[in-house]
Image 1: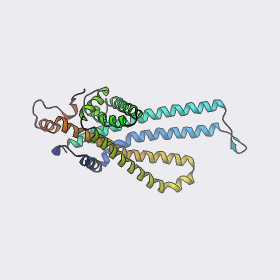
Image 2: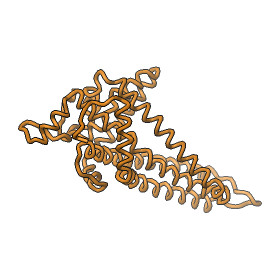
Image 3: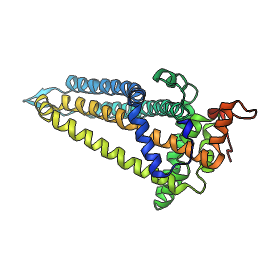
Image 4: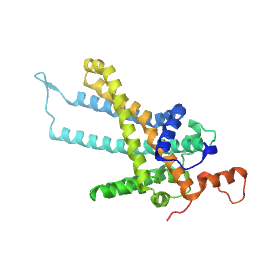
Length: 292
C-alpha cells in the first residue's frame, strides 16, 4: 500500500478497510482468535463452576429445589460479583492485546511490510497498559459527553477517536494519546465520526447475520440439550462473532490514523524519504508528532 499513499475519501477508506480485511482474513481472524479463545475458556470455566456449585448447594425437597438460606445467597452474590469483575478485567486485557496486534498488522500491510500473527503479537509487549489507559480515557470522555446531552459525546468520540492507533504506533504515553488524536483530527472530527458510525453499522449488520445463521442452525440442538448447553452455545457463538467482527473497527481506525497523517503531516512524503534513506526522515511507527 505504501506505493499509493494519498488522502482518501470516507468511502475510499471504508472500501480499503474491507479490502484489507478480506485479503488478510487469516491474519486478522488469527490475531483476534487467540485472546478471544482465552476469554472463552475462562467464561466456560466460570459457567461450569457455577452450574456445579448450584447442583451441590441446592437440595431437592419434595421434587423441588430447596430455597437458599441468607448465608448461601450472600455467598453466590459475592461469587457472581467476583466473576463479573474478573471477566471485565480479562476482557479489557484481551481486547487491548487484540487491538494492538491488529493495529500493528494493518500498519505493516499499509506500509507494504512483511507481517504475521506471531510478529504482531511479539510487538504488543509494552503497549498493553498504554492501550488500556487510552481506551479508558477515551471511553470516560465519551461517557461524560453523552451525559452532557449526547452531542458532546459524539463530538469527543470523533476528536479523540484516533487515540488508540496513535498510542500503539507512536512512542507516546497513554495520557498523551487523546491529545495526539486531537491534533490529528483537527478540522476532520466529522469525518472520523462518520467512519465510526458507518463502520459500527456494518459491524452490527455482520454480527446480526452471523447470529441469525448460527441460531437457526443450532435451534433444535439447544432446545433438546437444555439450558446448560444453550448457555455454552451462546458463549461459543458470541466468541465466533467477536473473532470475525472485532478487527473491522481497528482496521478502519488505523487506516484513518494514517490518512490523517498524510493530510496533516505529509506522511506520504516522509515515508518516501525514509525509503530513500534521506537524512532526518523518521521511521513511521516511532514518529511521536505533536502531543499538545
